[in-house]
Image (tube, rainbow, N blue to C red; front, side):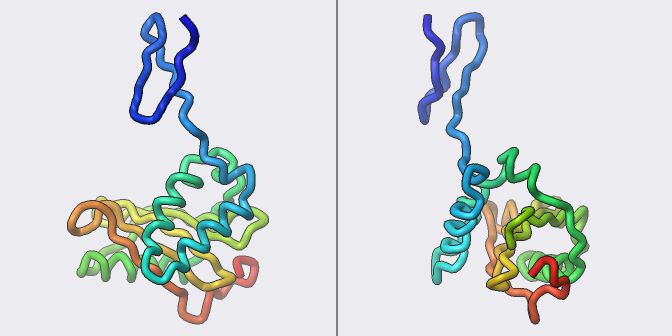
Amino acid sequence: MSALRYAPGNLLVQPAGTYDLQLPMNSASSDFSGALESLRTRLLHPTEYERSVTYFLEEFAGNPGFIQRSEAQNVPALSALLQRIAEKMLATSLKLERPALFSLKGHNFIHGNAVIERRALLFFYFPAINTGIAALIPGTQGGMEVARFQVPGGLPRPELN
């Protein structure tokens, strides 16, 4: 019997009970500039900017090349803004836990996550256009809540701008 491949909607079992899932690989790491431009375009859409979160999760999250090229950053102004955004989404004062902020080497892009009230807060931000997205998962009504944001005055660290 030949090796079986993954097809959308199908889980095929190989002989001896092993699984050979040939899942389609996200391609962001093969062209970060192009993938970031696609993400930026989705982010700036006047009404459907929420789709940028799905694109980010599909193309970047879990991508080994993206993770390897991301460097930890300490950006207190962005962390404080993310906390205020999450508090507005949840309509209460809470502390952002375990914020993890990263910049993508060689690109003007910051991304990361945190925990707030046992929920995941994912975000990404383009300093050059001073615009980002924060997504709270699950949202207050289930699913996901998304907020597009800008950092008042931009980021104070010139190496991130």
